[in-house]
Image 1 (spheres, rainbow, N blue to C red):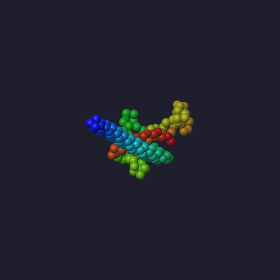
Image 2: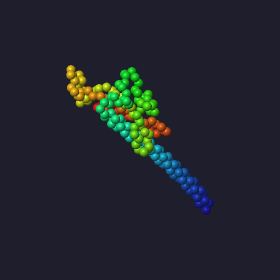
Image 3: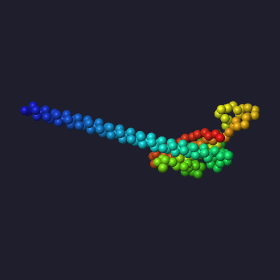
Image 4: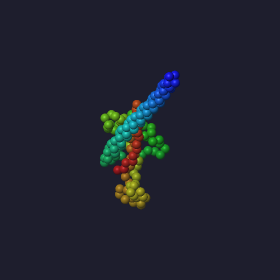
Length: 167
């Protein structure tokens, strides 16, 4: 009879150890799930922000698609070689940044863009056309660098993209 009482105490200790192990496993699983939810949320936010920036690039391209884009008031002249890139210095709230139309119902930060005239470049299909004595018509065309970005307001994702647009 005395031997059975000793065994009952050991069973209690073993079951408590198993319960602690199961609790630790459950807590680890909850922590992993929470981390995965945060990563998914950040990826979703980045995708929305990237869509905002791509829409801003498209809006700038559409605005450039006019008769004389070089004369547009929001287009910067050719940057100087020793000048720091405008898009690294410009404050997004400054008047030189054009606000793009917001999309995604305010779920992502709105984007803004700047446009820089980069000069007349040769057609990529005929890169040596400008080295001819008399360049053929349409050899050189106005080329622009469009930079669009969102700001990382309130800890949300920030995206910056650039594209070269040719007329």
